[in-house]
Length: 128
Image: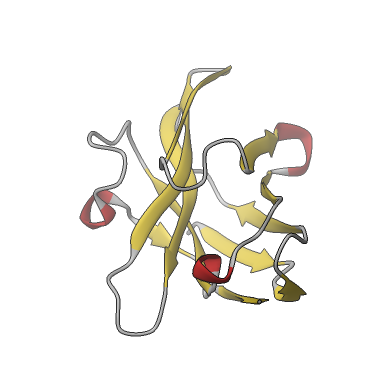
């Protein structure tokens, strides 16, 4: 059984930085999608960024336009951990951030219905 556990959320002022981590256990697949979603109060869960893993090679990265140039997704295979480095945070980034994984390559990448595994979420609050 795959388990995803997020950490690293917190409260920061606008312009600050946070790094989220997602520790994964269990076997997802030989080719899979792994990434971050977020959900603000009263809004639908939306995709932030994902990595496509094809075989043993790290694949391409896709990110939402709203976070390009500010957020960076990365993966440490040795630690089975996914990261989201968030810089230049804005109040509109305030949300509960979730780690997600799918057993195959998800297209479109932001279709949350296609993801099989979810973490419990970690809260990020950005004050102005």
